Image (cartoon, rainbow, N blue to C red; front, side, top):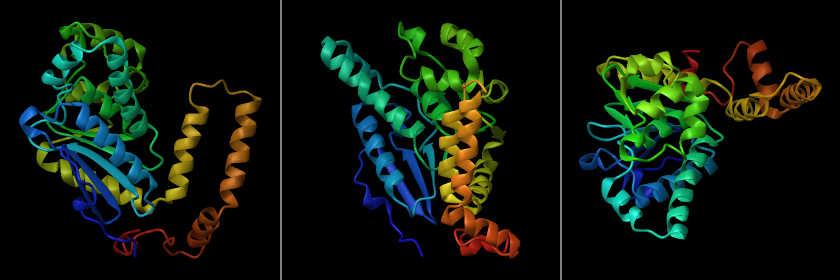
Length: 277
């Protein structure tokens, strides 16, 4: 059995981290400020995500927010302080935010965004960095930076990857709010459900993720990064053949095939889910 941990494992001022049943629930915990970013939240989230990625007992990470909002972007007091920074301090601060986003986007295990309420600015970036995103019907989104005379720079690689350059040209420039239905239409979220059903939908997804092989999931993420936006040439074709050959010969690959042929659950499937396979 994987070891069990509690939120006390992580001493955080701005996050609530709960680990149970091989799932890490990471909740932004500044509800009075709509879970807005400041330097502390950014640093703590980077540290927690890195630690979870290194923990073999954690199979998936859910990112959500306590209170009425998912994440309202940057804390206004933090932004005011940044405005007084010199060029070197300002760059270092931006690099810290960029590192946090890169860490979430590059996590080797599945990540799921569970979105209630507002996701503005950097909050949209968090959604785009996750592998799977599910939102409540009444969630609201905005790439709001231009209203403040700013640009969504550090989140842009991930948001553009999710919604495409054409939609980014509209929503980066207008900074208008858009609905969960529109977020679904443009590809920012994968699914939208009534708010009372959101937790159940997330649990369904987690159940599916736990049945798949953890090493296979890691290799799938590496495969996507290695193939996306590349021409289908000899190098890509050869690389994919080499990749599947290596995975087939791996211990997890052999176990998965043996389990399928033996009409049994693979050894990585939690006991509670084996009867439901």
